[in-house]
Amino acid sequence: MNLPKLAAIVAILGTLAAFGSLSYVYSQEKSQRIACVHNQEAMREAMLHYQTQHAGNPPTRMWALWPYFTDPPENFGACPYDHDRLYTFDRETSMPVCPNPEHRIQ
Ligand SMILES: [Zn+2]
Image (tube, rainbow, N blue to C red):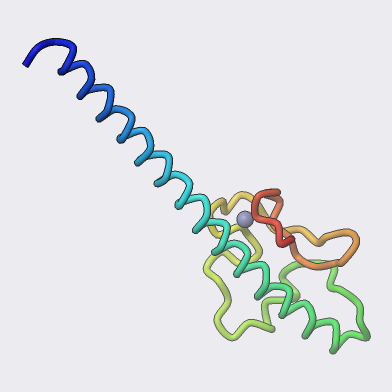
């Protein structure tokens, strides 16, 4: 095999590997977002239950939502993929949101 053919094969394999790793990273980020959005939706459901029992008022602390879960997530009140990022209450809707802007529910 001569050198130009070998260089072409190496370039093609390198390109394929790059696309493969890019799609892996993309699918990882997408699955993390889906898990976090699902977590936020469960927190919002708990918030609605809390508000119906407290004259429509939101809690001051996230932990007040804990009793409204039958099976609370392992890292309650935090992004499932970045446990240092604690959910906060959205100022406009009072609903729990992830501080990661890519995990926000539209
Ligand atoms: Zn998140």
